[in-house]
Image (cartoon, rainbow, N blue to C red):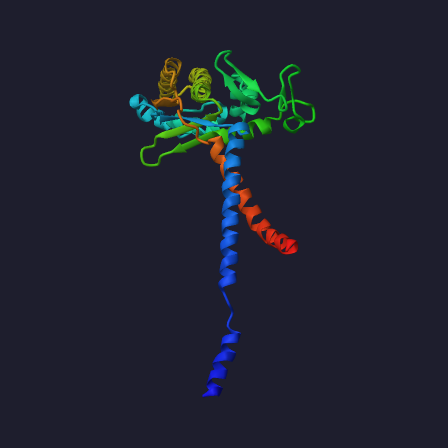
Length: 316
């Protein structure tokens, strides 16, 4: 009987007491949560004080599609279009139907359009260096560390070797503020643009859509005028009456396109829901600051708790 009791005693002495482990984990969790809470509150306060707040304005647009060449030219125009590749080399283009809306979407994403748009509307400084829009003066307050308004100089990280503003930096910021999506079901286009001021976000997006329409309309006008001159010149030179008739039909079609482009303001993108003035920020500074602070608090809490325990042991 005594031998059995001794065996139980020996087995019990080999068991690990988990109570201290659970106490350690409980204290570590409390310490870490306290650090997360304190740093999250501090980060949110600092975020409101120092981080920018962004507002996003959105517009819903309907793409404009150019119908194919009218049936008025009939089989004669179809015969002429069989030689489209040859005529294209000679200067005849834009005869087939195309979606101006799709072109506008791709145009808005390009670097050349972005830089030209920003410079036309003097948006380089507000985009890269603006901190807050003063509604009383109607001007942007500028970060002096980014842009010196008195000398017109940018900080070195935003400039090329010649000291001019880098188009790459400008385009990268433009892309970060822009969002474009096309619904495959409804074919509607959604375009959004962000600014640090809600009214300016609405204004910038309105200017962006207007510029895209103007750019494609100007291209269509130039193209139609060039095609008309080309078709008239070719019609005078050809001796085949069928080809001459087809060319005059196509010239008439280009005249129609020319008149449509001249009178159509929303040439590529028709507004279904115009740009709105946002009421709430899309990237609130307090939330960003709070998340950053919480992450820092989590890392510090997990790192410092073992150190605090070692300090307590040393003190004792």
